[in-house]
Image 1: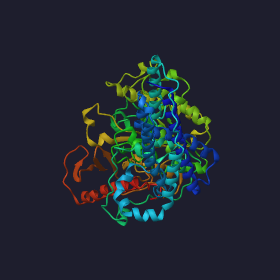
Image 2 (image 1 turned 90 degrees about the horizontal axis):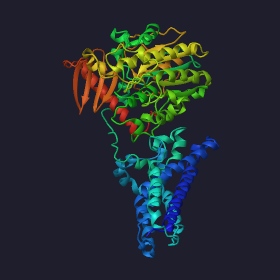
Image 3 (image 1 turned 60 degrees about the vertical axis):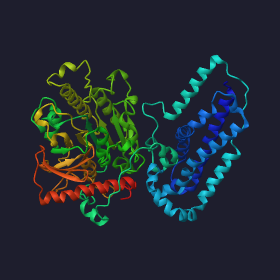
Image 4 (image 1 turned 120 degrees about the vertical axis):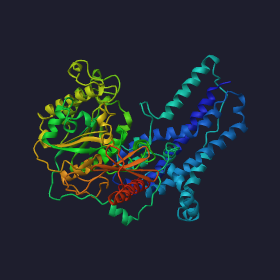
Amino acid sequence: MHYFGSYVSLLKRLMFILLIYSLCRLGFFLYNLGWYSDMGMYDIFTAFAKGVLFDLKTILYINLVFIFLSLLPFGFIFNHGYQLMLKVFFFVTNLVPLGFNIADYEYSKFIGKRSDIIIFGVQEDVKEQFGQMMLDFWYLAVILVFFGFIMWKFYPNSITKRQRIKNTYIFPVILLFLGLVFLGLRGSFKVKPLLPVAAYTGSPERATLMLNTPFCIIHTIGKEPLEVLHYFSDEELDNYIQKPYFQPDTNRIGSNIVILIVESLAPEFVGYLSGDTRFTPFIDSLASKGLAFRYGMSNGRTSQQAVPSILAGIPQLMDESIATSVYQTNSFFSLADDLKKSGYGAYFFHGGNNGTMGFDKFTGKLGYQYFGADEYPDKADHDGSWGIYDGPYLQYCVRMLTGLPKPFFAAIFTLSSHQPYAIPKDVKHLFTKGKEPIQNAVAYADYSIRGFFEEASKSDWYRNTLFVITADHTHPPVEKKFDGFIDEYRIPIIFYHPQISLSADTEQIVQQVDIIPSVADFLGLDPDPLPRFGKSVFLKEAERNAIIYNHNSYYLAKKGYYLEMIDGKFRFRDWYDHPVTFSGKAMADTSLIKAYRQYFNHNMVNNSFLRQ
């Protein structure tokens, strides 16, 4: 037997707990009012309004069993005893998560974000300190009791058998209701479901207000936290990984910045690195005019690893993407966002379908305004797979940058050299020199980049712009000679300015995480907020290295050799994987690789990259 009354009562109860979550958010806001004193009314309002989506998804997860028990097609669900059991079940299953929410009124002050599953990793400390915490924060227990009273007292008890559903309508009604529940569990109509990082489109404080703690815990269940390492004391760590420093004689605030990230641009396809000039004649021409580093290194093997490395200066020294890990709500220094204080706009362009690889959420967290395939005006330019072809998309980028306020900090990520290596039919006949599809796709990307620069050179912003051209990662080798360790990570890194002559040692090792420090150095900015992984390429360094992670292996690449750390053991090899005898220098490198690991893990676990 199915009755509309059971559905109506269930909806009332779910709306009731949704209201409780909003009241809990109001309590969080008032408790931490100092955080929000400078926040505008619009940001506060949207945090509350959008927070309802996070609350709804959380409530549906927590109450799935309650929903099932409420909709059983039997007459006994209307009995007083059964309804009392539902009330108790509802009360317990919702009060415990609310307790975490209320505990974060205070705890979020210490970690700078909402708590997640990592809090259970310190449960022994909580047990030891529980008595003292109850004395210090007794008023949080009072707040929880208050919410418990509200939940019990005003729980919607009434339920009626009226309006029995006809048998012919039962299946459609159940299907519709389950569809709405499924949509609520996703929290989004988009390709990607609603994740905690989606709240980070403004300040971290606004995101903390928008989120709720049970949501963050649910979305980090099953994700392994990083191990907090203690190889060195703080003083010893500072000796190994020093704060970045710049040459203080420049001030170029007002210069535009464009970072062009080319998909899968491996060294064997780039003329200035391989000697084969068939595929990237235009990129090679830029290399001849600017600073073209022969030993540029990626900090990982995937696009998701590349974006934090290039735009935040933080290598992803763990398996899971930062954007989907337990640390997705952490705060990171963003040079592009920081430059907004100097009047800059920050923009990230990627022709891929919105939601692809979480770029929209992560770059939004770094303060970039995101432009993806959804924002592109002509869907006829879609390649039918990943997104918009490079040629028309890069022309669109020029038009957008010309129309946007100056100065700007823009990152542009291409996609046509990604499998399936699609090239528009009207120009496909121009790219036939390669024996593999990737080679022709790279040639098309180069052709598209030429069009971008030719069109940009006609604009009023071009001559006041520093361009950085690099790759996200390499590509499996086509030629056997490009099958060594070095070629698995070696990428082009080029700095080019139409008016300024740049100077640096182009034979040194540089890495993706060096790009942001180099841009900051070029502009003449204070280096203190920057992570310590990278160094400006404009500094004269006696010795440089690249830190790389891939599947539980940590690599420290230096000129001519690399050191691998796996399961606490070390291997010392040359760039083409021949064993090399350990030397005193290599032994010192084992300490450096440990220092990088400790520095990364500590700041990720403690959310302290902004407070280092």
